[in-house]
Length: 105
Image 1 (tube, rainbow, N blue to C red):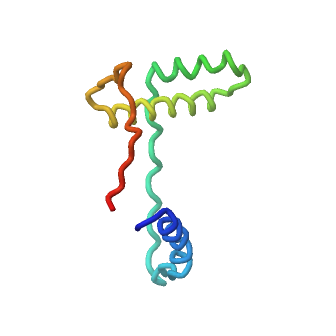
Image 2 (image 1 turned 90 degrees about the vertical axis):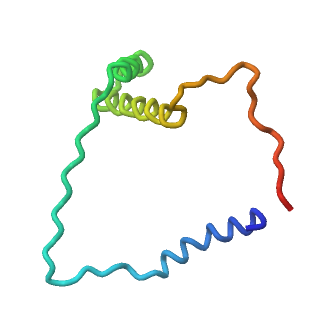
């Protein structure tokens, strides 16, 4: 794609393409597929549970389910950070993002 307009046009046409494709029909008379086993809730770490518990200082009306949801989100983000930066290297104060962009013509 040569420009942003081409990209936006291609992205917009995906919806039309998906709407035009016929849905996959299930064969009649076949036995129904068994429902998958429910996924077990992930174990929440003590660090995430403690951090989420501190959210009650800001909103004392949080229910236990909401605090558990916050704790699961914290655990997910910590795991995501470990996958993105497995060596745990930190940025120095002088590190900056690249601000010069070049386009091959």
